[in-house]
Length: 357
Ligand code: GDP
Image (cartoon, rainbow, N blue to C red; front, side, top):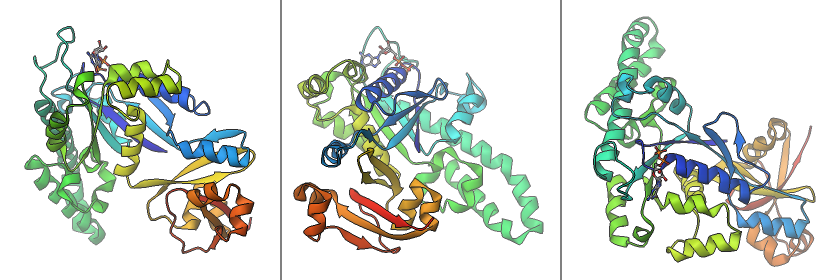
């Protein structure tokens, strides 16, 4: 499943947010309880109102939302790339994630000290990015002599060598590999941190959530990366509330959806992911695929045999299905299409696959 690493300086609200994410996900999606693989990993269901509707139409016993894995990556401090704090452990944890979510403190609270004395989102972003860039520079420079040796005797290693040299040049200017637009293929083996997409969570005071000018300023600091604005303290109160009360609390501070919903949505967007849906009496379920995935590739997410034995897919758009009221009615209205192996999936397709096993 999609995995997002949460990083940030100490005392910015990471743990508060991580606990809120995993606990509210538990309440929202009972079928994916906050599964503890390791203390710092939480698997959460992506809230998706369409699944409830499908469950009603199909009389499904269970709802299984798409999953996002959040990894709370502690230990980022100034100097982490030089082994300060728990630097090495930190780097090992973060390498395995698909995206990096930076939590940036905006809230002010005299009782919560800031490691650098005062709250400054711009400086904190620079500190974190500098650490990640340093870490990648070290990785590249360590790999360089080996790649130079290999490239001398193996022609096909030349591309990797050149890719790493290009990455070093980019990193030395203080840019991330991702924003440089370098071809990532030759760099894949190094698992560079700054080759991953970044997204940003700004942890605001409740009354700042409606400050459009402030949010524009913060957004400009990280553009074109995506920014999510929330109050971790409020997020941590949501999971104790009913859905209605939670929405009321969010609306009282000018928010339409919880931080979890925002973060899951933006995470999907950042990584170019979308979902398709299946439904029956047993379960209504969302499956995660890459944008642009074909019908057989989508089937392969359920089971590799489904991809191999793919014959065709019966596809109804969610909206058509809801309008028709049942799959049978959608079929007789001609809204259930039979698609072959070249069909490119769309978000919200409701699918039944036909396959050989
Ligand atoms: P971490 O070190 O980044 O994991 O930070 P924590 O989540 O442990 O938070 C540090 C302190 O800041 C705790 O006392 C939290 O209660 C407090 N805190 C976290 N988020 C907020 C917030 O949005 N507003 C305020 N006022 N305090 C917060």
